[in-house]
Length: 489
Image (cartoon, rainbow, N blue to C red; front, side, top):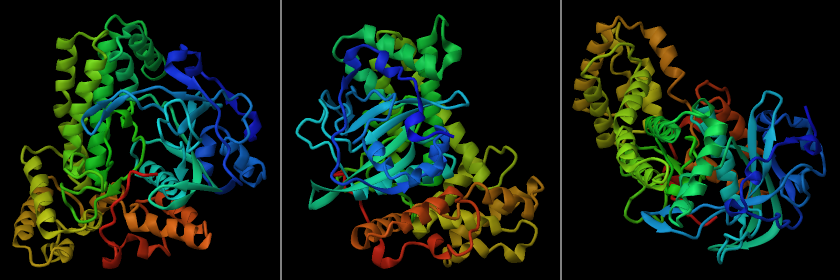
């Protein structure tokens, strides 16, 4: 394991032409201090977890002191925001410090969010505030625990820096990690300014790093687009199956390698509702939970347009057209596993849709119901009503339960085995908005960082029963329901 000054940098993005980025150094925060450090993320770059005790670490992790080998830059990209193209985005408050190789041959971006103004900051201050940094830190680790592709979070550094949002808040930085931070919008910027040679160069960069089996292939750019469509379809299926809502699915927030990227006003479903909107700025529900698959398709169509100089339109449109089928296949597979179904039956899509309709009508907690469904018995009809305790006297559920039982009996399902399998796919714990808000309040009101670490450890193993955390699996208390999140961070 290595000290922070010994990391092995290999800054391939910096070797691209200067139009791909702006060379810039972080602007130091006032009195930086370590709020949280994630040893699991540290292991990905061979960073010794004992470095958390290094008094100089907050300077490195906030950008106040350069990590040897790093070559900071702000990445150039544009994108469609709420359906409208914006040519003036880029890393306005985040800086790619560099790319670190680990001893296993992997490579990770170190991307510092809240690092200060860059050439792409426009009129903004380039800062992030502590509350939003805490939410992204916890959410990225929660998603990883759920098995959903995501950026990771190494550290939070707080400060005495005053940042003006709706109120005066404290500035902070998040050092997040990903195999790459290239986005759909990274291609759009070059496409809409007529720089097809750069579209090709960026595609080659991504292919070489993340689709190496395509290198040298004659039709590699079309195959690359196919790979992006496939990864995106799988990602969105995972989001929908676990009840995650991103909140701002702009094309500049879409990862080219299928990661969950840029956590802002996100949220996990509590009461099941396709109309759930976590972002209070999304007045028309463009990025509601139920819209996410169609928005992903729309975003892929914009990516296909941006790749127009390397993939002919008739080919790219056919590739993108495959998204719905791929998404449907992945979603069905995941939901069948969540229901404990082992075999194929043409009635399964209707069985799943019927259950979701009942959950919506009865305003039932999605996570807790799916977890409780593991107690459903195909062997003993007397126990069939156990999951219905959350649904009251729903006659629709009784009909559904009878059909479900017939389905389980038809494939010889064994209750104990099915429950074990379902418990490994239906989490006991998710990052409910009120839990994140309580951790934020502990820090901001009491200077108590312990709840952040408590949640990080809990959400690392969301499928396991964890003694002492019973309260964390309960539905949101009535007094703390209805939290919506601002884009201002």
